[in-house]
Amino acid sequence: MKKVFSLLLIIIFLISCSENNEEEISKTPKLLTKITTTEVSLNNGVPQTLVSTTDIIYDTDNKLVQSAYNEHNGSFIETSKFIYSNNKLTQRENYNTNNELIGKTTYEYNGENIIKRSSYGNGGTTLSKENSYTYNSNNQLIKNVEVGYFGSQPQTYTRKYEYLPNSQVKVTNTSNNNYFVVTFDNKKRPEAEIPYLMPILKLEAESTLPNNPTKWEDFLNGQLNHSNTITNEYDSENFLVKRITNNGANSSYTREYTYNK
Image (cartoon, rainbow, N blue to C red):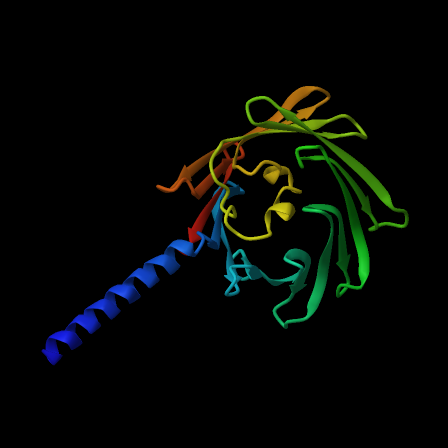
C-alpha cells in the first residue's frame, strides 16, 4: 500500500511540474533573439555578398538589455546596452570591441511618448544631434524636428508625418517638400512582444506603424523618383521571419529574424 501511495505522489508531482512548466512557457513572450542581414550587390560586375548579425539579450523580466552588432563578418563590431527608469527605456550606450564607451542616446518622455531624443558622440560627451517629437491624439508621430551639431553652425531639419488610407504613411521634408511614402501590412513586427520598446520603434520611418513595411516610394518634386518593393514572410503566429528588399536589379537586402520560440 505504501508503494502505491508513493507512486501516486510521484505521478501527482510530475503532473504538477509539467503543468507549471507549460504555464511558464505560455507566459514567456515571443522575443526576437537574432537578426541576420545579407546584402547582395554587384561590385565591378562581380556579385558580392556581405553578412551582418545582431544578437539580442534580455533580463529575467524580458526587458532588452543588450544587443551585439557584427557588421560584414567582423569589419565593424559594436555592443549596445539599454538602461531603464520606471519601466521606460531612457538611455542606450554604445561600446566598441575594447568595451570603451563611444556614444550614447538619451530619451525623454511625456507619458508613454518620447518627446526628445539626444545623441552624443566622442565617448558620450559631445552632443551631436537632438530630435523633438510631436504626436496626434492617437499617439501617432506627426512631427520630428532634428537639430544637427556636426558643423560650425547647427542645422535644423523638420519632417512631417501624414497617415493615409490603406496603411500608408507619408513623410515630408518641409525644407523642400520632397517626401516618401511607406506602405505597411497588418502583421506583427519582429519586436512586437519586447516590453517598453514600442515608443522607441515608432520614431523611425519604417516603424511608424506597429506593422511591417511592404513598399517604400521616394518622390522628388512631386514625381516618383525611386521605389523599393519589400517581400515579407511569416511563421504560423504571423511573426516576421524574413524580409527581402529589392533595390533594383543590382542589389537586395535580406533580413532573417530568429525568436526564442
